[in-house]
Image 1 (cartoon, each protein chain N blue to C red):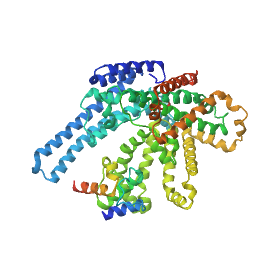
Image 2: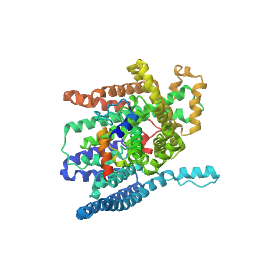
Image 3: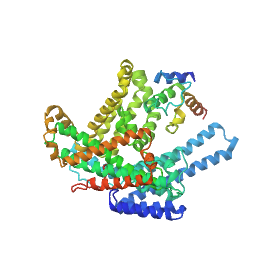
Image 4: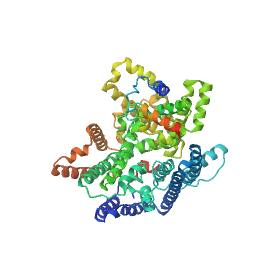
Length: 525
Length: 75
């Protein structure tokens, strides 16, 4: 069921009503029932894949938990009879067993994801290398599978590490995996954080409910008024690369940056807003990323839960693994201290960005996208002593003006890397970017050619106004939540503003033909 | 502790590790720095810091990191 549909609004209204009417101990069960109902719209087969993840992760967690409990009580029982070495050996023995369970769970789930998502990509590589003609299997990607599998794998790794005890109640665990607001495009929640509010009980809190509703409205505004309007131009510009070169490539980079931002953050606003209306706190996924001064900072502020997932579950374990430490030792001896100490960090960084690219999609453009991000991060890291010297020497580098330049630079750099996503053709993307320097068509900016991309001047005016609104809100957020200020206004003002915002969305929302206005870009990942 | 301070000073010479207790919270150490520290600690003290111990509480100050190393050496 798409977020942007009357069906979803009716679904939400029914849920809110029942959620606050039923006895509080049943609230989470109500949520589970509604989440399953929501997911049923994605088809029964999708439900089977989710059931596999829920079942395998729940039972693996339960077994690991039981083994850890048994280990602790055995050591306690033995007391002084067990010396330090014996305890260590016993712990290592149990750890081996829990590791086996963890590995099985990871293999089943990540294997399932790999088969569904990457089989055709693998076939295309084999066909390309060996000139074979193996047919594609064309699996349909179950809705949200990348998100709920990563969330569940985070849970099982945490349980294995002993970060928290496994959830004992199967239905409660099923809700953690299937909680509907975050099924479409995340965030990728952590069990110890989400479970604090997911299971209630929740009294109806008007302030919380209204603030959540405001965030949902803001999310709809970003999605329907800005992202869904710009999508027409993005499709036109990327669909005919032979026609749209030079200045049009620059325009595509800009339009897609705005579209993706409005689409993804809009969807996350709806997710977090709906959860807040239910009294549930979902992790933030963005922290005004276009204000980032460099790429590393950008990735700390964009899709935060994915970044921290890769950091906690791949980057750190890989970097500090015994094998990597051995490589580090070897490279220090053979290549010297300076290069040697960089090897584990950079090797892990390359692997993580390769995996991040692959997570986004089974295609070379995503892999190259990931590796280009990695390249920029590593180059920035290597140049950081130079930057520091520059900042010390030139005073203007600490001014607001220079900060704005850095934001501008980061925005365009990320934009040019991101455009791989829309062309979906690696050499083609580089060719197109090259035309910026070879095609002298900047005059098209002023001769009305841009009004032939499927958007009229009114559309561009709406997008411009929408961007101004997003920028204003982002700047205002420097002084705290804008919604807090809204809630401090008299009720008449608040309701008038809310009605005006809803009318604005209905009047200026893009509901054209030719694209699915309900689909979010990140849903396909 | 002296060896640990030397490792940390190699990473960021301008930080006062005796008083700073917000190395992670204030973004002084990033993930690259953390891995460099762990690698150095591993070769200096012959102790492996597992991934689940890479949490802000253990890396926010030199004292906290020293406490972690002592705990791991003791295990």
